[in-house]
Length: 107
Image (cartoon, rainbow, N blue to C red; front, side, top):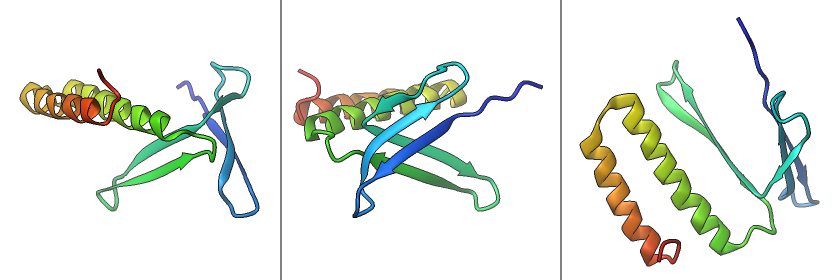
């Protein structure tokens, strides 16, 4: 069985706020910088989602809006693939397309 490891390195300022985020995997070879990350893990025992949401101090509000909407859209793609629930996926995509327009992510 093949295994792979993804690592995150988060540099914090004196107030424990992220100032730099890097991730690396065997496929990327070198550390890759990013301004924000959202990691969701399913806890089978608790039957609940655990999350790690971090963003650096220099991430602009417009970038966060785009990051948020794109995450919802790609999560919806994952939901659709995993469940074949096309109706709910279309409903979510339509709703967040409107939200994206309202907050200026989509024209």
